[in-house]
Image 1 (tube, rainbow, N blue to C red):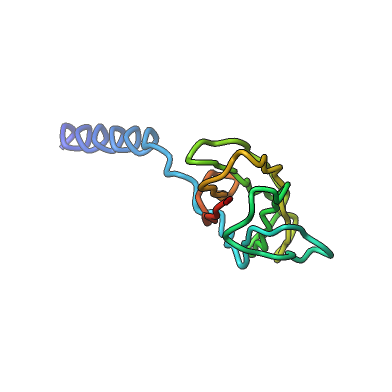
Image 2: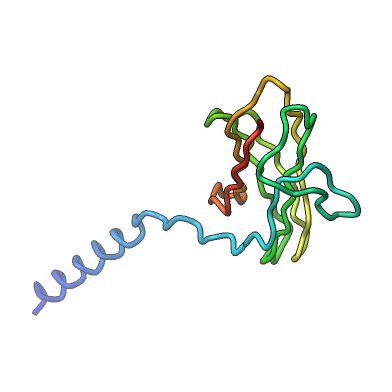
Length: 136
C-alpha cells in the first residue's frame, strides 16, 4: 500500500511539473477591427477626401485613413506602406477609444509608379486589412 501511495504521489508531482512547464499560448487577438479603411488624397475634419485605388504620379502625397472599432483600452495600430512589395515605412498610430479614426500620410515621388499597398496591423502584428492601390 505504501508503494502504491508513493507511486501515485510521484505521478502527481511529475504531472504538476509538466503542467508548470507547458508553453504559454499565444496572446489572444486584440479584438480590433477595421470599420473603414481607404487611401485618399487628404483628410479633412477626420473624414477622407477623394478616396480611390488609382492615383496620378503627380499626386504628391496620400493618406491611409482608418476607422478602428473594438478597442477596450488604449492601444496602437501600424500602417505599413509598401511599393512593389518593398516595405518603405511603418507608422505607429494611437487608438484611444472605440470607434477611433486615425490616419497616416506618405509622400509619393512621381517616379514611384506601380503597385502600392498599406497593411494595417494591430499592436501584436496581427494583420487587420490590406489596401492596394496604383500610382500611374
